Length: 150
Image 1 (cartoon, helix red, strand yellow):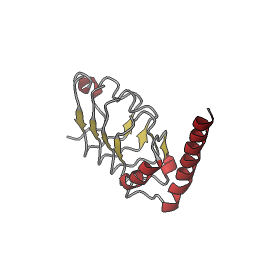
Image 2 (cartoon, helix red, strand yellow):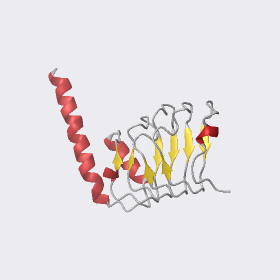
Image 3 (cartoon, helix red, strand yellow):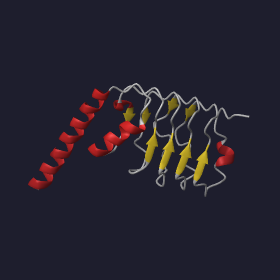
Image 4 (tube, one colour):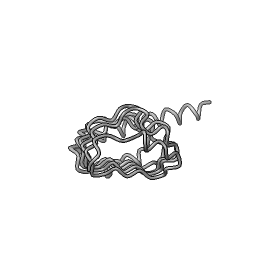
């Protein structure tokens, strides 16, 4: 039997759950606040499903998240604003066309190169990374200048 949606009424009863593995099912969407009742989740494996919709606050409340595996789905864009810094997000083999499709991304310029690695198998052109890097570099320089002045 394969899951078509997450049975959160059962999963949320396990408030101490640290790892959730629901890979190789038929999940198609991740709704807002799906994991809010599971604040200890550190590892989520949702690879090899049919996920095409990831709502903006799907991962809200996951301060301990370290690994999010979403490879081999149908994700075209995703908001990573609720993902804690340092968490590794694996998005290989989805339908991303640009790193701009990764909304809310908070990473350093160095991490952008790593992010490209985690996004292999998408249709991301190598030139697509440069505008993001330049924008982040300009923002970093502006912050440094402001810190220096004040």
